[in-house]
Length: 116
Image (cartoon, rainbow, N blue to C red; front, side):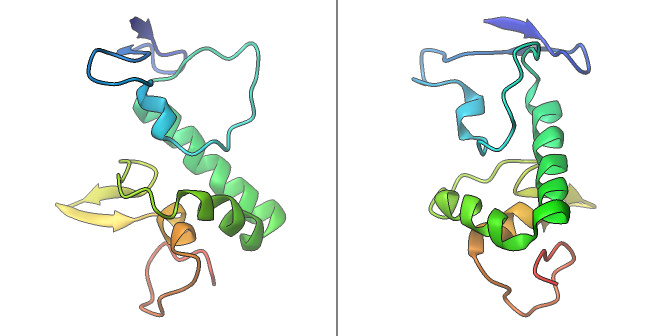
């Protein structure tokens, strides 16, 4: 079903289609608080809101709580643009969320390492 994003006003498809049994947003991590006055967002705006929420939660409550939440998604191999990674100059840059799903620091000095 065609919808208009409540943030950027772009049209996008919301809900399951013939090839999927669930909406595309079901692949996104469930960390946004439900707000009854909030309308649907396009994939890009929802990814940004979730990434902001991840940063806010780490800042307020520390990394351990986010590791616990992220561990539920550890085996989800489908990477989501804007949540698991961003593209910069043709390179994939992993996000804090991606590293949180790993569960620990790999020791490689990653730019978005949330472990300090």
